[in-house]
Every structure is written in C-alpha cells, then in structure tokens.
Length: 130
Image (cartoon, rainbow, N blue to C red; front, top):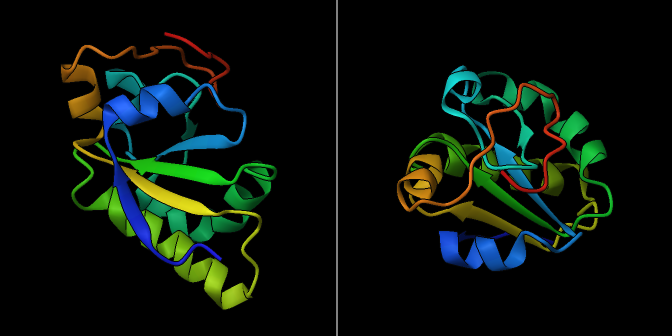
C-alpha cells in the first residue's frame, strides 16, 4: 500500500506521463481556469479535496501512480497527497495505487521550464499534449 510520498521532477514526469498507468492531479483552485494546466491532468481543487477523495479513487481506477501538484507544490499539493494516502489507509484499500508523488516546483515551475501546458476548458482535460 502506498504510504510514503516522494517528489518527482518535471523532467522525470515528462518521461513518465505517456504511460497509461499514471494520473496527474491538479489541486489548484480557481487559478487553473486562467493559468492553464498540464495536459491530461485531473482537477480536484484543494478547497473541496477531502469531500471528493472517493470520486478521485473511482476516476483513477487502473492507475498505479498519482502525481499531485498545486502552483508551487509547497502546501496544497503535498497536503492533498497526504490526505489521499491517509484516506487509503483508513479504508484499508490501496485501490491499486503504488506511488503517490508530488511535482517539485509545481505548475509554476513546470511552466517556467518551458514544458507544455494546455489552456482548454474541458473538464476533465482530454488533451494528451499541449
């Protein structure tokens, strides 16, 4: 069962994100709608995250690696990742999740490094590439 949370760099995520068993979870709140997002990411705003963990578990069925991020991945991203791991421990079900990661430097670092972003308004984002 996934118990620890590790960090992943943007470069590492670029090489992993094409794998079908990874999900990127954006926990930013309103800024996602005007700042853009990582293509293909799921949006679970931090202010309602605890209420929607069960929905997230259903949406990531078949995935074994989740990568959480917020703007900087200093507070909201790591906090939501920890809430998710704690929830799995409480329900005594790992839901097939082996790795819970947090994106170093968050969305802002991702974008500042010139990595692709998506500006679609689809929920969930259907884009594979920006």
